[in-house]
Length: 174
Image 1 (spheres, rainbow, N blue to C red):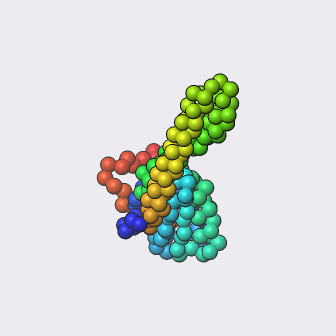
Image 2: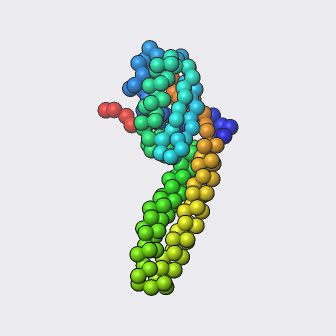
Image 3: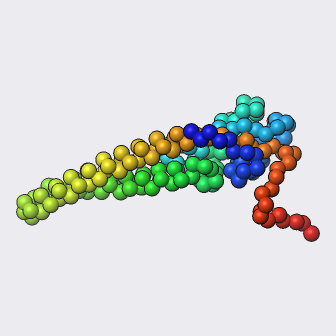
């Protein structure tokens, strides 16, 4: 778990604000910054949020909007690296998983061609099974590391003045 709480002027907090602002009526917003806890979903492609300080119905709507934002918010979050590692591990696990069945059915089909082909297919099946078990173990480790990446953020509310970091371009209307 990350001990730091992201401030309202962080890039992630502002990204969450831009996602949930249209979904929540102005009357439901609290007076100060909104506190929220985020946990990555097990697939690594979305965030599960819980908001404090909003009425229950508005908090549920905000949590749903965050979950529907999917990868856009995950990439801006502090757990983006862990989520990317989970997605990559899941891809490799799926490669071995989908290659397993053809290898299994190839063993008896190769028997009429000779025992050498059958033993070669059996060896390929055994290596694929070992790869599947190994990649699944890596996937479980990376999911555990990602799930431990729970973090908190203070979300700005309408009317809250934020400090813009130096070097951030400011667009003026003419």
